Length: 86
Image (cartoon, rainbow, N blue to C red; front, side, top):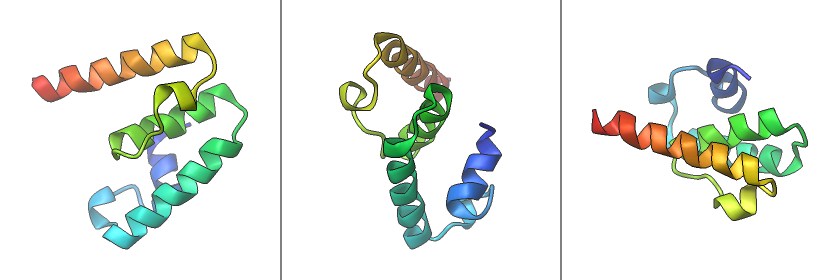
């Protein structure tokens, strides 16, 4: 899944700065529903990643049953933390 496609799907734009707080909350709600229903591991990870960036991601133990998926999520979190530190 392309990042801009995810933004357009859930927020109607690829510019998050243009989304109202209410629009962001509604988009996050839709993402959480889709995350719970999605069975494709890659799509689930993409949705979780965007939720993480928005501060709304479910805990790893709840979000991912597979150890490899949880480890990938931890790596993503570490990369984001390192990028913030630069």
